[in-house]
Structure formats: structure tokens, C-alpha cells
Amino acid sequence: MMLNASISEAMLDELRQSLASKMSPKRYVHTCAVEEMVGRLCALYCPEAKVELRAAALLHDLTKEESLQNQLQMCREFGIMVRSEDILAPKTFHAKTAAELIRRDYPAFATETVLSAVRWHTTGHADMTLTEQLLYLADYIDDSRKFPDCVRLRDYFWGAQPERMDEASRLSHLRDTLILSYDMTMRNLLAESVPISPDTVLSRNDLIALREGARDVT
Image (cartoon, rainbow, N blue to C red):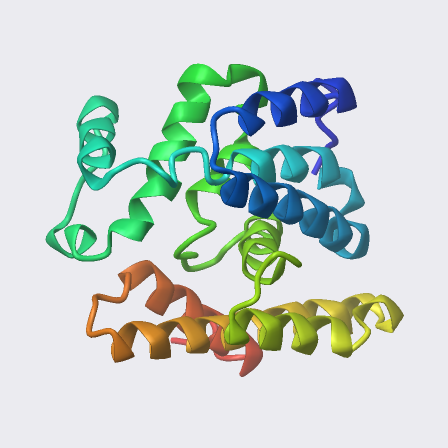
């Protein structure tokens, strides 16, 4: 993975300032906290992607505060397929619409790494890339999150001191943390009697197969 030299610190500063006027104060605090957390994760896993993933973090909730009606309108505009279960789980829309809005309105940041990380930061999917995994996790465990599951997952990840692990152990720890995050998410969705994204189920199953050495076994 190559560093995208076209995204500069000055561009990130300008983007941050622009978003401050477009988001609620609470959403902006979360956004900046995700940027900080993904930077910490990149230092452990892929320093070369740090600039791009910080940009992705700043843009990941670009459409989060839009109404369901506006989300559906954007889906129509961008040609995004809407399934019946999506309507019952409206929080999943913003990842799809944000990725498309970045292409249109923020082309300087529309790299493959940024777009894929934003697109999959809510549900995950099977065979996620490392950069997709890092934004997904950063969004779950950033320091602005006070929900019990978020605190628990943050303590689980950092409490194991991944900075002291070798590369293989650190990657295994990331995988196990993601599995735990999916377990938490799915339990909560089941308790609320709302649909679970098929992508989330597939992502969890894929990681478990990887952990058990069963991936691609015929």
C-alpha cells in the first residue's frame, strides 16, 4: 500500500474546519476522536495509510445526520440499491451515501482506501482489508464513546498492550477484537428485534474461519 502524497496535512486541516460548520457539536467531537484513534491504530498496523485513514475518519459520518427521507433520496440519486431490511435498519445508509458523496463533492479525498473504509465502516463485509478494519474499529472505540460495549471493547483492545506484540500477534488481536465487536453489535440488534446486515454476519463468519484456520477449505 502506497502513501497518498496528494492528501496533505493542510488539506486535512481545511477539511476539519469545513466539517465543523456542517455537523452537530456532538458529531464533530466524535469525528475528530475517530480521526485521532485511527491515527493511533495506523501507527501499530500500517503507518503508510495514516493520512488517508485520517481523511476517511473525518468523512465517515458525512451523511449520518441526514433524515431517512434524505438518505433514500441520495440512494436514488447515486443508484444505490435499497433492500427491504435496509429500511428497518436506517443507520446503515450513511456509510453508502457518504462514500458516494465523497466521490462527488470531495474528489481530492476520493482514493480507493478512503472510499472503501467509509463504505464499510458500519457493517463490515467478508474479507475486509486492513484499512477497512482499522476505520471500523476506530469508529467503535474512539475516546468519545461512553457506551458500555464501546468502553469494554476499547479496554479489551488497548489493555492487551498491542504495541508490545509482534506483528502476527497484533494482527490476531485485531481479528479477535473485531469478532468481539460483531458479537456485541449482533446481541444488541437481536435485543432490539431489528435486522442484522448480512454483511455483518458474513464478516464475523469470515474472521472466525480465519481464526480457526478454516477459510477456503472445501
